[in-house]
Image (cartoon, rainbow, N blue to C red; front, side, top):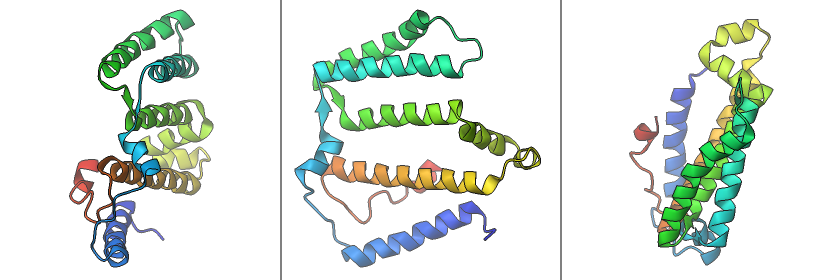
Length: 184
């Protein structure tokens, strides 16, 4: 409708907060089922951690090969990504393993990095972000790309809220208050 997205975001935040308070009656919901709390409190240790770490190192090496203008040999890329990942897995295995939220973060980072760097839609988003008028003149219709980006970010915000609730073991209506400016 032509309303600046910042205004819509803040207005929507206030509206959804009111809806949450109305639905929950202002009370915390908990304890959450074990299947959900595992998403925020679970760990992948031992062999699982090494499998995840190997997958991450391979994914990072492959992503660099797809997105770099002058890619290095695969062995060099794998070594560059594998050393820090190996160090992280060793450190995390000294405790209980890799926390489930870290696994989700790594997977999402790989997927969205690939989507932004190696796809036409991702390149169009970069083009629109740096100069929307030039993107429009180049034939890029910004509306569907912006709606898609906002939808993806809304989904990620919902996932973050779910992981937060799973991490603390309950869903509080006031969770995340005053974090919006940190996010901005």
